[in-house]
Amino acid sequence: MNFDEMTTGQFAERINVHPVTVRKWDDSGKLKAHHRTESNRRVYTEEQVRAYFERVGKVSGSDMDQLIAYCKELDGISAKQQTEHLTMYLSNRGIQKSVIRETEKVYRNSELKRIVTKMLNGKVNKLLIYNKQVIFDEVKDMFEQIMELKDIEYIIVENEEDL
View 1 (tube, rainbow, N blue to C red):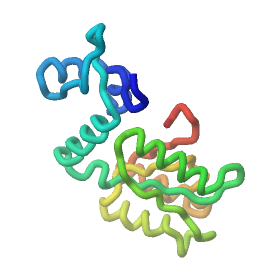
View 2 (cartoon, rainbow, N blue to C red; view 1 turned 180 degrees about the vertical axis):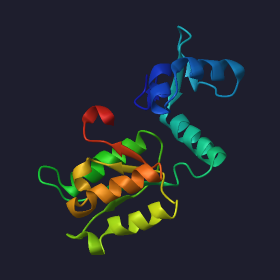
View 3 (tube, rainbow, N blue to C red; view 1 turned 45 degrees about the vertical axis):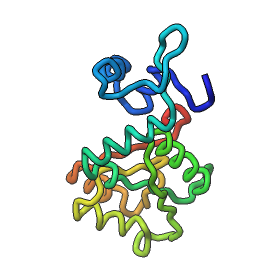
View 4 (cartoon, one colour; view 1 turned 90 degrees about the vertical axis):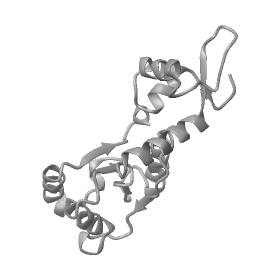
């Protein structure tokens, strides 16, 4: 297999479905493998992952449009490292989003405050972060209460296996 090629199981994992689903889609014509090996195994490509997410995004509306990726400097892991982790997480799922990098030291003037406004207005349904330490201590309880009330999902990408 080439660098950007993957097995049915790898492809299924990338698009967050079961391998049996991918096989059924291939059999029905809903999705076709890029090609088959000599032993008749299906092979998929990175381009197919991107195409799948583009198609799903257009069909399902704003699900990924309402995801926000956010980071700020932490002891032990820089905002740059967090940005790389978050970008890899998104890229591995075929999502093209910018990571909001916090530059303020206090909540009052922060990007996080602007994110809270979007959350309250129903414009955020997922928050992608490295870990919960990126949330300002002074508002952590209130922030989590808003997330719970608005049914906003935390996606935490602290470990390599999360990528």
